[in-house]
Image 1 (cartoon, rainbow, N blue to C red):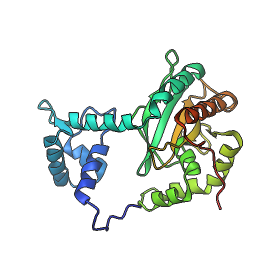
Image 2 (tube, helix red, strand yellow):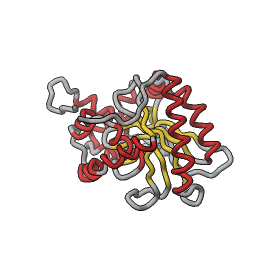
Image 3 (cartoon, one colour):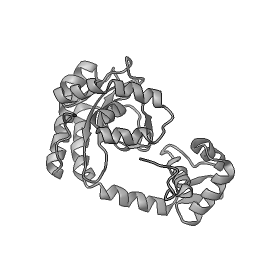
Image 4 (cartoon, rainbow, N blue to C red):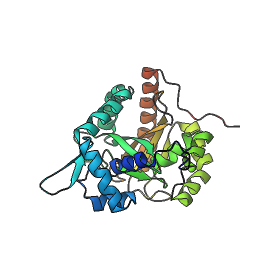
Length: 266
């Protein structure tokens, strides 16, 4: 639970981290005004934070356009964090093979506040795939990854999410209302199917499977996605979903993790 009023909570640190989280893979640098817009912080506060982060090497400011970009210290910290997730090494070969053989984009999403952020993508080499990039954030709406995350999360993990006071609470409540159905779907077939359109605002068909790592406190979500013209709902459910489920089960065996199947709740 995030308690902003706890005397141990370092507000300045939290604001500094929100500045770092404002950056996306597709950005060619950000100005103080753009960071202020994305974080909701006053521009004067952002100016002090970007100066401090720049002095520490977390950001660099280009003399060409005065825009800030991730610095070497932030890159080093990110590398250490990624290396600590030991399951990513065996996952790479499994998921790249899955992308090649199914012609779908495979992504790995983790929760970051009120959104799911993509931390890895695997693209088929010779097939055009949907355009999702590392760092892209998916809101808690009826997309495949958020639906699967809430189904796989424990009641305590959901309480922790809700305690963060997220702005899009109505959308989360709608996902929670759908949670029993999604949990039943995972228990029955091992994956969640989220077709384009319908309940989902996405333009692509997707199937998702949860995975639990001993390195993380919450489930992470592996998803395969493709445009309907490239992979119909029927193919996604008959072929891609079972193959994604098998790949995640193999990853669990390789890493010694407990199966991420849905457990009964009391």
